[in-house]
Length: 288
Image (tube, rainbow, N blue to C red; front, side, top):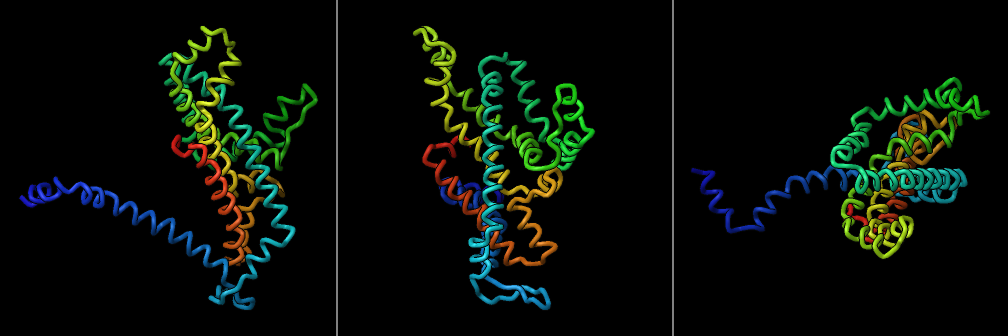
């Protein structure tokens, strides 16, 4: 009876229905993400007692000034940006032909199998995949063994290993948005382009790519942003290489300097906001 009365009360009040539906998840998002992020950023302006190692609420800009003036942080920032950009380019170059084949060439049964094949790595543990790449990149690993007859050697543990591993990890996140973009391209446009005498390459460049550009940029968001904040992969296959995530992790843990770690985290957060603001103008966020 009470349920019936509640339904009768809510039925003509659509805004109240929407508010009741969204209040809990929005409050959870605000508490877990926005408030936690704001607290982290505020911590960047606090200090650490040099004797006890305790965080003290004494407002200062020393941490932020140090992060934006020290050569170490500039070098690591440029290295992190370079790795993130390389991973994004590699993933996009691999994803475009794979997604095109899935959407426009493969039959329905093969398409379903390919979608499963692309998504299957996501079911495995992140650490298992990274340690698998550590084995591949080792001196006696599969890559070194396969390249030995051709005079090639494994890239080992370093920047190249990090780029290869991150490219593998984030590739499914890039393929799926681009696949969705190709799937939305009407087949009749490809047929019309062919009827007008355009070759495959011209059709791809003049007809298809402009239409799927938002999907490509949407896929690049995953590869770029996830690479920018990663620190586990670098620790396992990066050797002595450091990225911004490593500096944050080190200062939170071993160095016990949470304010400095928070100040360092301002760099990737700022880069990601600038990147998202730039891609928003392209309409790519609607393709996510």
